[in-house]
Image (tube, rainbow, N blue to C red; front, top):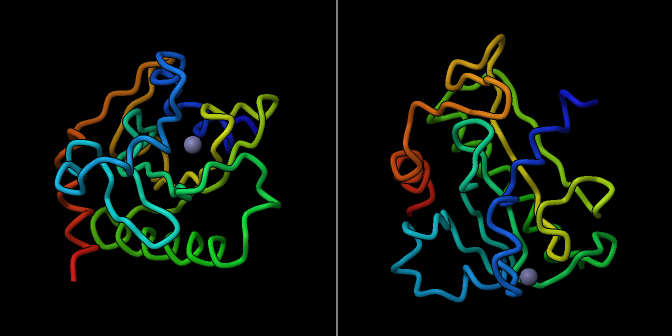
Length: 162
Ligand SMILES: [Zn+2]
């Protein structure tokens, strides 16, 4: 289980604790012109897709409802459906750009589960490669990513433009 679930622990952990504001509420309030800077890949009606600033593998993204909500059973059907649709679209984009060998996706809900941002639920999606992961090396807690975040952003964001 550690193998499967430990990747989620890296989400935004380094960013929380610096202010009382919720990062997932604040980010989409910005001008969409600044989405490349804030790493928002796509804005849906109820959810947005955000590249993880601290990726576990290349293309590690979060699908986040705009609604500030911690309790997954309270996510309404419309928001849930769009979240799943965006998960499908994001997997399709990852497939086209990186051709990974597989995917992990899931949520950490609550402190005991290792949630980085506890009060605002979010779905992690990440690509995996067979063996030692073509796109990264893991040495202890240090992850070496061969591609910078804005390059990843540009490749994947292009998949969401009409
Ligand atoms: Zn929030």
